Length: 106
Image (cartoon, rainbow, N blue to C red):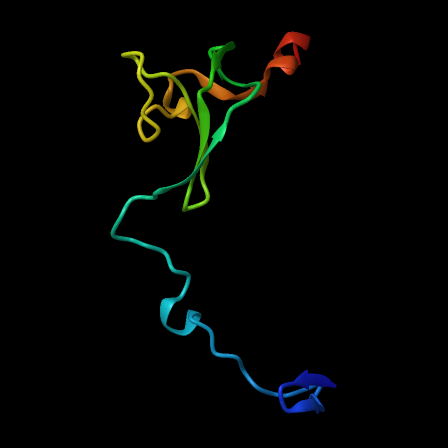
C-alpha cells in the first residue's frame, strides 16, 4: 500500500517497467572539452607530503570533480596556487603521511 493524495493505493511489487533516467542522453556525464574543476578545498591538518624522505608541509588538499585528490604545497615564490602547486608533481614525491606517523618512524 502507498499513501497518495487520492488515498491508499495498491502497489504492484513487480511492475516490469523501466525507469528512464538522464543516462539515456548524457551517458556518464564526462566532460571532454574542459579540464577538471576544483570541487572542494580541505585543510591538510597534520598531513605532510614526503619528498625524498623528508616531510614537506601541506597547505590544503584539493578535490577535483573528476574524483582526484591531491595535496597543495607553497609554491617556489612563496605563494599558493591551488591549480599549480600539486605536491605530487615534486621530484622525489613518495606519498602522504601524518606528522605523528613520521615522528614514530613508520
